[in-house]
Length: 403
Image 1 (cartoon, one colour):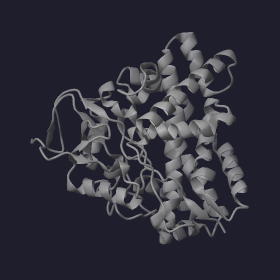
Image 2 (cartoon, helix red, strand yellow):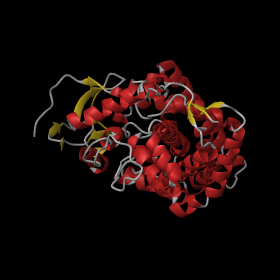
Image 3 (cartoon, one colour):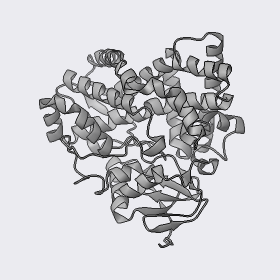
């Protein structure tokens, strides 16, 4: 067991060039499994990039969720009431609170319940593509990749249609974190917390047949949720329920268009779509890193002794590009069968919405490729940029020629 003493590096969170970001995480993955880094907040942390080591971090009970690890979600910047309304959810909780909170929404995201949403998701996809069809060029993110999943999750929770794009604007800033700029971040966070409180109060007055009304009933009836837990649960479901799928669709289409042999194979064999979605999740992970943990006691990870009380950041993107994950990890191969990727995490915090994300990805990609057989990039690939941020890994825009 050894201690790492090298000068902390700056993690590739802010790199706007996608291939450069992808390559930086891949190099970290094969250089060493553990790296000392400086977060955008200036705090020191440990970035975990080895596949086996990331799996360890994601399920090791000695690495816990704690407010001490929440600097990037405004722990020291946001007004206390805004911070509390956003962070008291299951993703930031440890047992037994984690199980209590997760159990309240598990039934809505089972594979069987999610598959029942398929006709409505297909209808939304068809309507969006019909609206795109008369254009010669579109930004896929604004026209399709964003409105599809945000419509699905907002309908599931009961968010009025007229506020959905506004909510997405706020959530995009919040998940960018400190890299969005302190004033912009605080403004968006305050707006999103205020809106959720208004929405929850409206559900109290006029409940409907939606998930948010059901959570309000739990809060007010059985008192199993605090008010901050209720607003935080709504925040998590709405943000995580669409931001990741936006990136799955955008990154997935980008990967296929820049790997024409794989695109041609998928067009020729559409039955490969489920495997293609898994490979696209691995190759261009929608999330750069999982949420941070704190070491509750000294822990050895990848041969490095990490003391108690340290911030640990597991990199899903690096782990998925590590040779320990799969053979030839730098190659996009939609026929890949050995693909134990970590795009949805691992352990007790494994993404609850994984079945929904996979279904939306299959429907979105399948419908898009079927309707636009001559789909191609409308700008040189070098002009594409990725959003900065300490969590998400997605394009700012994806201009496409449709015909």
